[in-house]
Image (cartoon, rainbow, N blue to C red; front, side, top):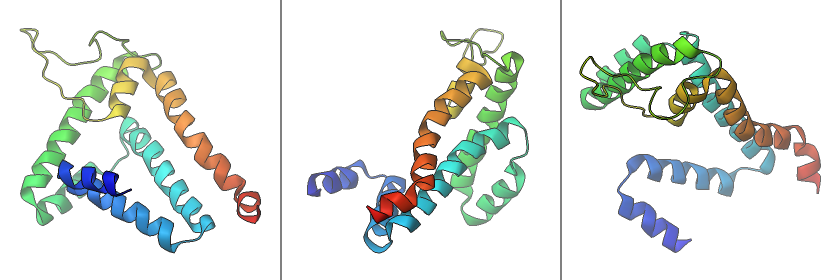
Length: 159
């Protein structure tokens, strides 16, 4: 455990440190049922963020406005991510169901053939390469164990 904590510090990633602190705090101070509820909320968020982006329902502008009020440098980074997601989503939507496949065909190129897109998330890579079918099957494999644990939580807690 100490080794992993040292690795976490050496990585100098505030996000990873906060996630770890949050996760360890949950496990230390909450009971199993509450941990499962929070896990279900996180898993649902991870699943539905891409679906909201794909259906163009995600509130990108209000989130960017709030981010610019808090920290303009990080908001610029977030806007860059959202812009690239939009570019890649438009390309992926051309082959909605089964995607573009491998070989970089899901990427966006300019007239000179230079790659002008940045894939900054597993979901956009999965959706672009394998379409909606591949996206659903990939992410449902991560969601189902949490859902099953949540549904069976009474028997898990009682045992």
